[in-house]
Length: 425
Ligand SMILES: [Zn+2]
Image (cartoon, rainbow, N blue to C red; front, side):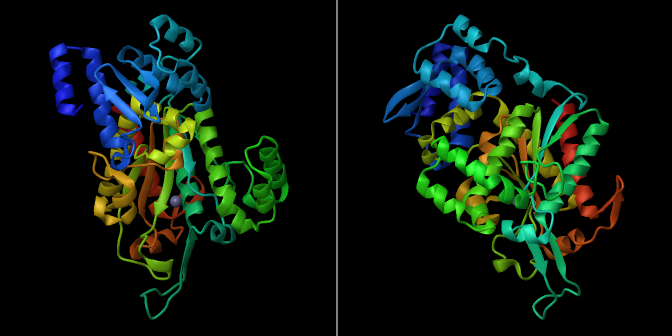
């Protein structure tokens, strides 16, 4: 059924609750179904929303269930909701049944968006990557190393890594938030530490075998892959296993903390600055939120739960609002142009543009699996000529440490955005 006739039907029936189904369809089209790729996997009509499997509904949600399902999706771990998903199937639950599922859950969480001020607010901060030195940064391939040459105007070598910048930003932001009475959790405890609370070198030396053995034992990995991974170098293991594995630990830590908002901090580069040997002239600011899912996501059942959470709860809209505030801060306070759809291939080819300038739905692992309002901030391009010079000097002293002033300014932008978000519901 086309949306216009569908809306007409709703209007003539005067079904207030069913109108929500139309709103969900609009949300699905605007934020969730990348290039229509979920259109054959989810169906909407006036009285229900269904997740399909081989063309048949395997899970159906009805308008009078939406609110309580949203509460369950927010308050339960995705794996636990999956049990409900597989039990409920297409049955229409009574309010009593829904209430019994909700028992012992924190029912206030969905309304938390509307409370003002930072006092008592739980904020999770995830500083992207983990390198705190150039050696580790070369494994992660997240560094800038520009040397003076005939091809550029540099007088000195410029050398730094993204993991250090994100950590410094997170640490400054943490202190700003704590001063206002917020409760803050940072996924990495120290510079050069991973979210496993040790360095990658330590993990590789002491934990690798135990982790891989345990995954083999629990049949999460077959013998062939286990043998292959055990024989890999530190660098190769990072790309083939550790990178994704560590991201899941970040999501686990954040979700256990049950934050009111999550701030994921990254610094970008110009994807077309080949090999990053010389600085470039481009500089853009942008932020990502969840959504933009594709059909292949649905091959993993737990992703259907993430999809339902993003569809039924208010998280996507709230994330868009927080992200728009953040991007506007970056643009107005740091003077960085807001990225448009055609400014990068990944924005054009992998993201859905939201109605908010500079905010894009991108199906990144953290955007999909973190169960909270979030902003995934990409403040500036590190390889921009002016920015790389600013980021290469620790010219500002704050909270007893020397950092690039630009980092302090970026932390301040996040802080202002969070403050605005909670102050102006
Ligand atoms: Zn990054």
